[in-house]
Length: 192
Image (cartoon, rainbow, N blue to C red):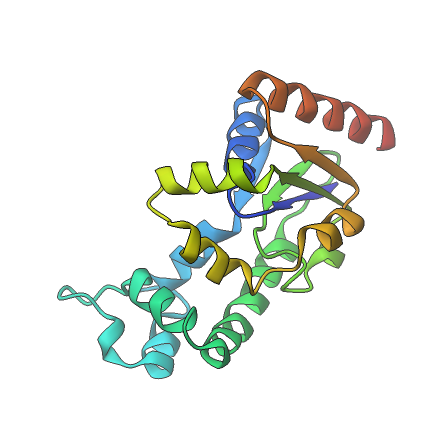
């Protein structure tokens, strides 16, 4: 069974993934996949230079992801072009993974936005109240204006909840998050 982990920005997807790994589950991080695609020998390196120009490169020739972010989050046409380039590669990699007789998780921040939900058997959404998410993201260096700017491109929370099989409100302690994940795993094991 392939399970997508998605949610709101700052909701706690990474915390959920860490816990699942600690339990011994295989968890693929699609953001990490994209980072690999951007490497010098990665499958999208040349295409990104063609798309955005050599200004996105560091002095060592690496792709500066923050430069791409500053371009695409200020120009939605360029963001669409980037997503149209990246999303098919993620879907190919997800489809290659064989989940025979096991539960495998995929952290997919833009699951619904990329229309990738059909690649998964179930969707687990992690969210938290807006104020909690803003506090968490501030610790990562994102201010509220930047969070709101990035969130404009995301499907709204209510729609994500409606499309998800399991919804975890991550507004408590880490132990409470773990308990919620344990409950989801119990349900998944019962459904296999």
